[in-house]
Image (cartoon, rainbow, N blue to C red; front, side, top):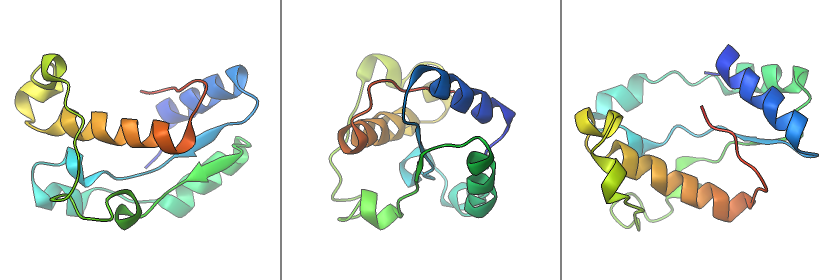
Length: 118
């Protein structure tokens, strides 16, 4: 569910790069409660329309099965011990491990020169 803050990141990326790829992925590793994952809004068509208006070059929106082909149980994790218990990690155990794992996967798949997060 892309909002104005995301669009500002897109504008920043377009100012800094010749090609802009936006990833849209609802990462199950970032949810410690299954019902939160189920209720999380998914508006891919609407998001793609917004990105098209911004002239984004590519949208990378893989299925969960493509990112985690062996399921979460068979997943290798990226854990950053010094950060995993700070900020949001203090109240959401495992959240930052999910973030660091998916960011590592995205960087390996897309191999960007720059990345904009928010």
